[in-house]
Length: 382
Image (tube, rainbow, N blue to C red; front, top):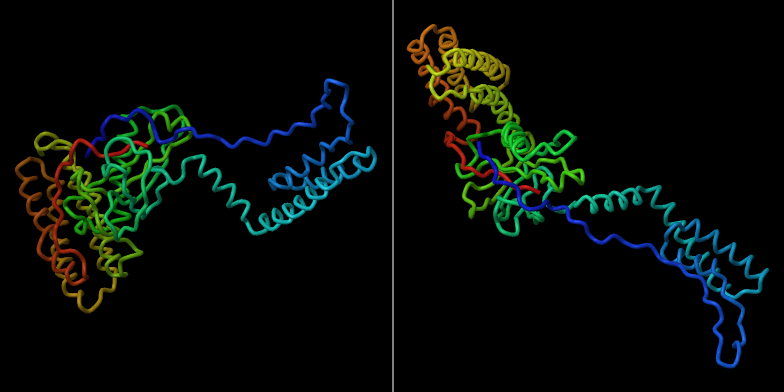
């Protein structure tokens, strides 16, 4: 699996200017001219000014309405100016209050505040992507640090396609290596739920991920976004790689669900490159593969296949049953040579031509996947 490069200098969360509230000031004292005080007019009521400001801003409309009514009483009692301001503030606040009531009853206010919170969190940036979305990056690369991305239709040329996301546990920043390890393990495990047919994945596609930086972690960023990208840094993707219950017919979905049981068991191959390097571990693995074949054949037998695929699936079942027996014998082997004998037979039966013919009958990809080691880079930091 690939390991991403060291994190960049900072994450995408950069503080921006925050809106400042209105500053209200009362009337200034009368100015003195060189020959004494100018004749004084009645002062403007300060409460009336506040009522007008709140009415114009539609901010706390209930308070603006109350202030307008208070201002009218003060103006009558003190002979101050500002009746028009108080009336205007009261009317505007009444309209604002009515709009707030409508917004609360329809959920519009909740949507507004949710949008405000999303903006504060950086929604619309790299770490705001959702499953199934495709995007481009400013530099066209999935390496390094991402501050922003552009979501585009998957039918267009794009750099990445999101297939899953998950949150890391809270607490102190775990470090770049631990985040990379968690992203690598979880993203590879989650890819099959989105792209069930491994045979349909192009050979130049691999798993990448967007991970938090130390800086973004401080702001509450815990999300890892898993995505597909081109193994060529200059390459792009076109078209969605999604194939799951939303895009498959029931027969295709049933077949791939059964096949996925075997795929996951095969993925658990021991780390030792040769059987003789860890013979006990390979014996346990062979037993797991045998059990997976029991589950797969049971699922395939339990589904009603269309007439055009019944014979092909039946032929496949015969090979899978024979493969299950060979893997079981490999698990019970007491020496390396016997293990290899049954392992080779079992592996060949799993990859027999009957798999291709069954897939062809069901309208699935017929090109077996080629598994190669990835490069050293597998992710963006956000």
